[in-house]
Length: 473
Figure 1 (cartoon, helix red, strand yellow):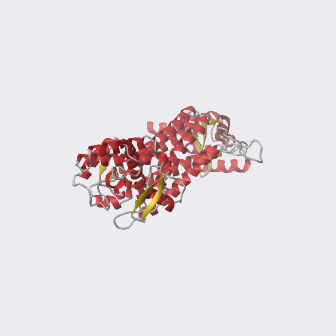
Figure 2: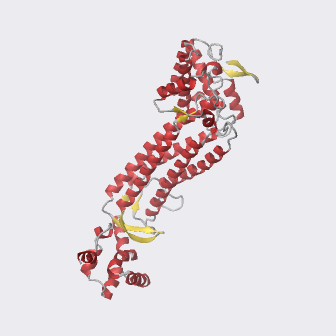
């Protein structure tokens, strides 16, 4: 069964069982780009429905929409928010028209759901029209970016929770490994001792700092241009609409969204998206660095560093029996590369706006939604499938410390830099241990070395006996 719908370009046959209409159908014909449809981004669908519901409530309060239409549009929006009609949101996420196809997909679906609730057939728009009623007092240019901001706000909230999930995993390992002595490294060379627990605590602190940055970025997204209509002047809306719809949107979303001070500026300014993307890039860069560390520390098992053992998730080779690869850090690394690339996309898209509108917002939305979604999944995967199951190779860690030439650094306050450098050089040439050379040269006694090389004396600032004597003089 088909129904006939029309727009100013002409008539089209639309399948009777679908809830979208002619403008969505034209978008389907025009934009077959990413094969990633609006239905794959349910939080964006919810955000669009929230904007439409807030608009209906505001228009009704201002006397522009009847109680009956307000009620049916709001019911339709609630059904859309429930996820029941996600499969009707079919437009490609990447599209021309500054998001008009997405906005009309929402308008048509909501209008046709409302029509059925009223007892009418789909397409009988004289009773509830996608543009005249569902889109009343709006333009794509304020409805679409407002829905973007709602969805980004919610995604950033979810991302912060995923980050906390990974941070908790790091913290558990930091506590588990707090007494395991190991060698610290700089420039991939032996440096000075530390604990494996301190290394994992560093990972926790790094992600904790970025949780704060994500929540700060979320606050930037609260400012919206709803009520500005086409270019921010508010043309075709009631003088009080912006004020009323702000209040209604806060009620519908339960979130502190506020109207921008200047709607013309807010309609063309994409700076907040650039900043959010920059924060996501920061998170990705630091997460990727930690994944690099995990892969290095677990390298081996016989010919690498091998201080930790990652969970064995799958066979690692079709030709080398027994080989197991660090596949979970590897996939997290690759997610991070995608996020960094998406940040470049966001930068170019934000820069590409002209005059009173940036038409590139669809690719901005697509890049940001993907970055947040992938980062959140990568962090939860890294925590549950990797970090939680990491085992310390304590004997390897200890042997690296006491066989390392780097521990000569601990002798500097007692025998001086020149003697320490000479000992390091001899140890490198001969393969002898640092302790052995110090004792051969008679620079320190065994008892003095035992005291110096106590873990507690190598892991934090402390005063030497000579320092204490100087203070007593």
